[in-house]
Image (cartoon, rainbow, N blue to C red):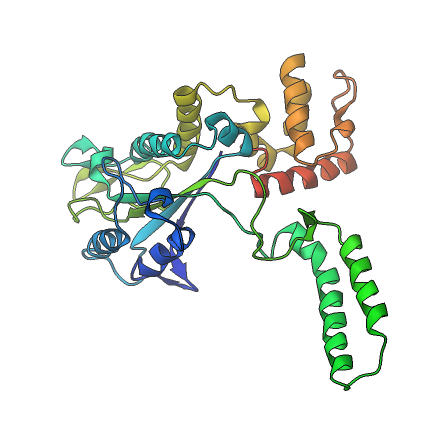
Length: 344
């Protein structure tokens, strides 16, 4: 499970309306029948129109300045193993969303009228998407770019030859194109991967739009607060403040496991990702220290993500891995994390 929380910006400025973001989230519904469309939903309602989402979020911004975020985007990215466990079921993802929004409110170190905030205090709308497309930053797109560029040049030359603007052998140029298509390192269903192409396999994920202000439009609830969880004296009294992201991310993972009886391996955990970022050496030695069956599953998960696990096949009493080996493994796990392919 990989979750992100971001304020919505357009360049350096905060978006003053949610309209464009809602339109972006509606793109998958184009040319689809009513029966298969995915609608916005919240804690208690489904099939909410995009018009209602825009009106509710945009009108809930009392006293917020232009320099302040009006709403936040939470993106919930289940791994392919979690989606397989759920059989890629939309209703299960909606159920999960409603549960983790309870975890979201619990991560605030805030009170409203002397009580802890609850899910009924926040205004949010969520939507499930089932597709992802390759971005320009993806490794497959970047490494195929050289071949796409050469092919584009050859196709342009062919058209010039046809128009009499250039001399050349069209048949030979077409053969060169076929060779380049075969040599390209990344393909999907026989076609070279390029930016904008739909990714293979289950890609379902959840977008959540949550208002900066509570439902009463009086209190600011920012998950972007720089204060993790603390108290400050304001006008002579103690006031709680802050949002604990670690708490939210960890709780969301536990909620999934409990809700769907999911047996999570170490390499799939949020804690493993934190260990990897702070101390890669400890991350790999922790894997080697797992019980035999769990270690085998960890190796399998890492291997399916394209990581050379043979580098980890050393005696468990010799866990001091060489620096070069650590860096080589780290690069592989970096890629797996960014693609969410091992769910961390």
